[in-house]
Amino acid sequence: MSKVFISPSNQYFNRYYDNNGNEGLYMNLLSDVMVPYFLLNGIETARRDKNSTVAEAISESNIFRPDLHIALHSNASPDESAGQNTGPEIYYFTESKDGKAAAEAIADEIAKIYPNPDNVKVIPVRNELAELSRTTAPSVYVEVAYHDNPDDSEWIVNNLDAIGRAIVRGTINYLDNQ
Image (cartoon, rainbow, N blue to C red; front, side, top):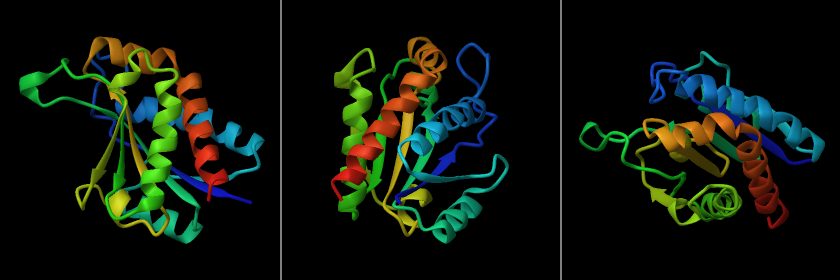
């Protein structure tokens, strides 16, 4: 049986553009959507505690020994371009070919539901994101969309089920090709 660790953001201070909710709230709701879809597909899941630190989430994931670690976040632009950026960004650790494969599989599925599929990006990073470089499992860091952009923020809030299904489908596609 395949195993997936889901690590939703606990950044409750990152308010959405209209102050109606925050990153921690919506990424935990997204996790709530994803877990049953993974279970329906025979994939065991474990999930980050809502109040744990990143280091604790990494430790929990490493103990669980998943086939994939998925960090869930929503993005925000720098102050000088606040509200101007759009699109999902899926990051992977540059040294991980499996992380890259998982990121591409998830991006392919998200592109099918995001209003502007050309804005869905797969981005390699080095050591900037601990959940990519310190987990023993291949990992992806999914920035679902920009919560400081009105259109992206509303897309997240109104499409949690579709986004969750897309991430699960992409994960299954990745796992099936391992």
